[in-house]
Image (cartoon, rainbow over all chains, first blue to last red; front, side):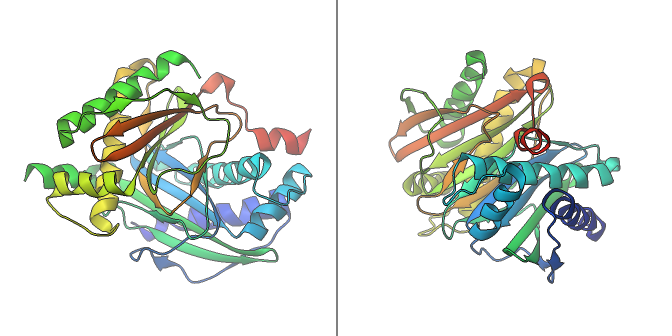
Length: 165
Length: 165
């Protein structure tokens, strides 16, 4: 994945957290997502398609998901409920939407977000997509943005190729 | 979500399992995905966007994911590894692609799949999307296809509306 595709997601994540939640983020060192490792407890996932196809994952510590819900909806859930799901889905949607606008040459549209909950769940991309993980710290706890993007001309459905070769 | 949007996903799931895996599926009773409930251990997720935005989840018992990998790639993994991730991602991709072709009036494109692993993980859609779950049984174990689709004119970013009202 091209490095210049990463910055729009970093900028969009910072901007969404700052403007929607009043929460400043400190970025850690990005890493290539080659090893399978568990996410934080709540992950929003959204698809991108157009001249590139991809996935964006916003993975939040439970404390971050609950604090964001409190700010955005004025609710103070003790547990992960439908309000938290809506909040995490909408943050994921806004981060992907903001990055997509900055990558207009790829003419991408975003899908509906879905939200995964579960201790030590793992999110993997197929081997055709080398994902990049971007860790952040906030006053509420840690979060992680993962992006996997494949330009259409390089897209090869791996399993199908293996099945017919 | 319109009922006529469900049948293409049922037909596509059956067709992909029959033609790619030689595995006949028995469909159970579809249900409205209002309650949060755990998925099977391995879930492929893919986004759809166009005149409708949506998400398709293919959730497989571990035994189904491993057996499918054996048939498709000729590998016999004991654990969920990169081959299993590729297999589940590609099955999800093919099911979404097949259904999309049958729903051509919605002019949808598919994103890249991602694959979630984790015992008792939960996949939720935002409250704007009422999802439908379609359980299936196979000789290898149980699987579940979940579809949430929102037509663009009815799309309302719930959290944003709540935040500004």
